[in-house]
Image (cartoon, rainbow, N blue to C red; front, top):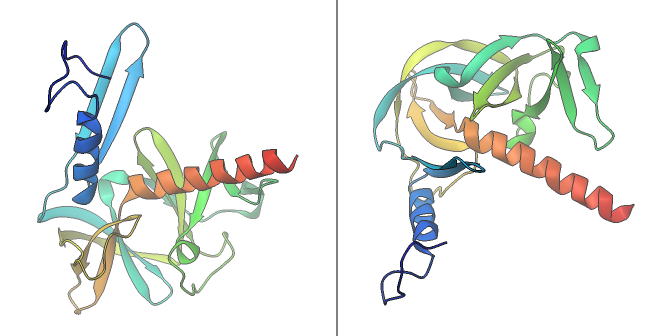
Length: 201
């Protein structure tokens, strides 16, 4: 898409926003678009700070610690067996007030051993980003604290679902979860699986 009347060496080729998106993603930001027919389009750019302090909820998954931004958390609870449903494609969902929310097991996502594997044993944390929600499954909630965000080193690289890290009071490193990235990944996996099932049928 281009608004330029003439194509030149530097404009009118319709790739400007793609360049913007790629550069924002390099600094672990994201671009989202909301469009409504007949009304217009809104382009939203989320640009992270290189160093910021946020309120975070510290959670435990096995021997590891993760930090979830408090602003992204709607609620946390222990699931009762009747609340959990396994869909035909293998995905787990939890029913909360007539709403079915997908479950993302953090120990599976990051390849680690958890203390609990039954959803009724650990804790489910409902998180929200861009009007979309999922349940994160962890072993327990350790508490709330102010967290200083530090960027991951180039050696580690970009990890989808992680926006940075913080050093805890005891010297341990806690990864700070990127809720939006986790939701996108969970929904993307679901779409890919449904496409594969459609092909098989």
